[in-house]
Length: 321
Image (cartoon, rainbow, N blue to C red):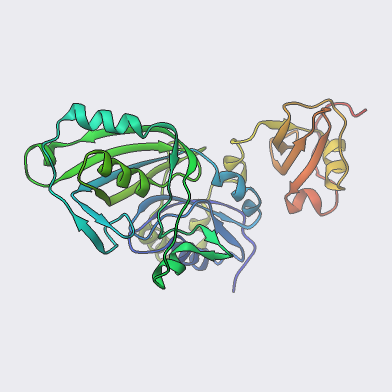
């Protein structure tokens, strides 16, 4: 039987599972009645997949646009239809003599704000249907380029390539929302004159989880078998751990009660835009928005803030006007 459970799990997604399959595995393991993940990883990919349970799903959308970091291995000389090792080879070309300077120059062209064409096999939707579904039916798809931000695209190791063992490059990527590492590797291969695809991909971190303590499915299953459900709950981060991506606004009891009733606060509050709402004790209340006149509006409140419009506990807050 599923239960009400709130918190964030930093899952180390295994290779071979889709993000949704991994989510359902941990949701059943924790018996959480509600869950969602923040940012899909391809089945080929491993690494950090933040999973939000219960009320934490209300901040999941804001985490989707967070900065992310990856380590990837590019295999030169082969282009695939999915731009990774799970796809079918489309063409092969010999890998020319390449040195570190040539690689760095190509990487530099793919850093910063760039125009990127997403893979045909992607979850982007057209006409309400994912592109990968259309591609699997053999439809010819033209995918428009769009602007993305690549904060870093750097060479970590080219020893296999330079020693003549295998045409592999190990790369580090830091990027913003909507960036496809598969597309970066594909375009790098074209700049190097031989094509390329992703052979391995691991997500290292997602803001605000820069130094994540990740849990594998095997470790979680072992904990439950050995020590029971209560020990599993200790693996969860509080919702507040995921709220540091937004500027924080603390309110006192009277203000929290008004927000819980759906009322706005006149402040003036700052900064303008979406903010994390905290009570006087630092407990998360939800998300709010400050308009151009400094008025604070409730946006998405957690059930304990919105249920009765009252939050227990003493604490001063800014005066209302």
